[in-house]
Each structure stands twice: as C-alpha cells, then as structure tokens.
Image 1 (cartoon, rainbow, N blue to C red):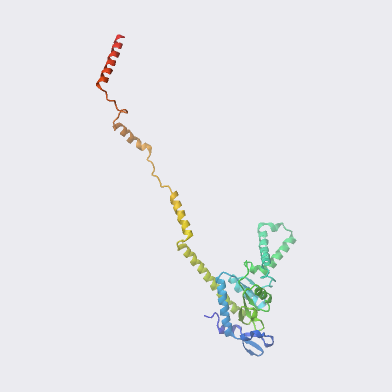
Image 2 (cartoon, helix red, strand yellow):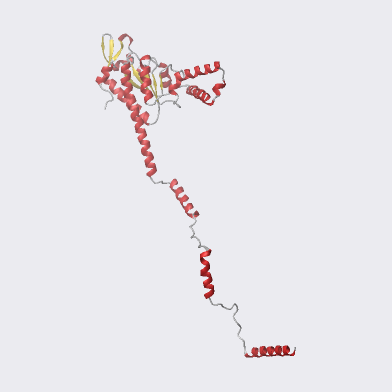
Length: 320
C-alpha cells in the first residue's frame, strides 16, 4: 500500500520545480513537463521513491539505528523539529557544525560540556563563580543548546541522513558520502541527485510539500520502532518459557545436584525429659534384678573345706 497518493502530493504542491534556466540536467528522468518556463516533477515517480525511502527507513529503525534529519532552511526548520522530535530522532535545524560526522568525537565533547555545566549548577559549584563568569557560562550553555541540543542523545554516528534541500546542505551530504553513510533527500529540479542514495524528487521550498513527505517517512520509522518493541517482548517471553539446553543446562543440573547433596534431612524433635521420667521409674520398679556375676558351681570337696573354715572361726570366737 502506498504511503501517499497522487492527489495528496498534488494538493501540497510537490510537483512544482524550479525555472528551466536553473535546472540540473541530471534531474531529467524525474521531470514530467515544462509549463510557463517552470519544470513539473513527475509525481508518479515521486510516490514510488517515497515508498522505497520509507521502506529503507523502517528497516533501519527496526534494527535500532538512528536517522539524522538535516534542514536548516527557514521553510523546513519548524516542521522538521516538530515531526522528528515526536519520534525521538536526532535533527539539525540550525547551522550545520562543520565536521559533525567526520570529526564526531569533537562534537561529542561539546555535547558533554553541556552536561558538565548542568552538573555544576546542581552541585553548587556554579555559585562559587563571580557574576561575570556565571554570565559567560550561561551564554555558552545557551549557544550549545541551540546548536547541539537536538543531537544530545546521538552517542554514535547515525545510520543515515535525511536532507531537505541538497544544495543548502551540501556539506552534510559531502561528509556522509565520505563516510559511506546513506542519504535520503528531497531533491528539486535544480539539484544534483548523483550524490543521493534515496532520491525523492519533490519541491523543497514549500512547507506543505516538506510536511507531506516527512509524514510518510516518520510514519514508517514509527512502524519500525513498534515492530522492534514487539520482537523484544516476544523474545523475552520465549526466553522465560523455553527450557535451558546445552552448557547452561549442564551447569544448572550440577548446581541442583550440589544443592541436593548439601541438604540435611530434618530431624524429629526429641521428647521432653520431664515427660519420660514416670515411664522410666515404672520400668525400673517392675524389672527383675539380675545378679551382676553368675555364681560359680561348688563341688562336694569344696563344700567340706568351707564348712571346716566356718567351724574353726566359730570355735575361735567362743574361746575369746
């Protein structure tokens, strides 16, 4: 399904090109006709190009990468800032900082400087400066916020650039080509499309024209982000439900066996000694008393000797 239709682009004035004397011959395949000295863009090709660019942007968003939008001309600044900020993508609507892509670490240092100033204001360090120093730091912070505030979340090079007006943003396109970063661009009849990877032939001077094409591209990016979120949720659910196999499962089985070896069976509580005392006493009373040593068997000779000894002891006692 097409993201835009012919009538919608026609109403927005996407088909209006530049004067014939300002045209670039490389744009000839995208020009439908000439009327009153002005080239008319073929909107059928524009619809196809928008769908191709939107599909590529959706795929990049689905993979979790960022697309940097660049539009510093007056007609596009407000529209780009509004549409792109809603989908949480970086954008540049003020002056393009030279070397933003080719010298990206330096730009990141400037962005970190903003966070350093913010930290100074929160921890009380800012209060130790003089009035003049505070004013200078505040002005520096405001300037950094104006130029680089919209790319504060861009921690690495973007996956692609979306450019409005290739001629005005020639430095950005040149840096992207040098680093082999794909470029999406609205290309008017006066521009050179040879440096653009995803050409969208359209009027880049009308706010309505820019808004229509941005709506289509931003909608594709939102779809890609939503699909990425659904895939992550699905993977998380499958990870919780799926059994663990391989080395991880072996480790888990070993841990389980170790736990079973360490576990000590619970012992029954010993009965209280006070409750056992009566039972023990009763057992002692009723139990027969057995001799500790078994008596020896006495023979007749031995008996006579014992009797004689007893009789002798009795006579001795009587004599006394």
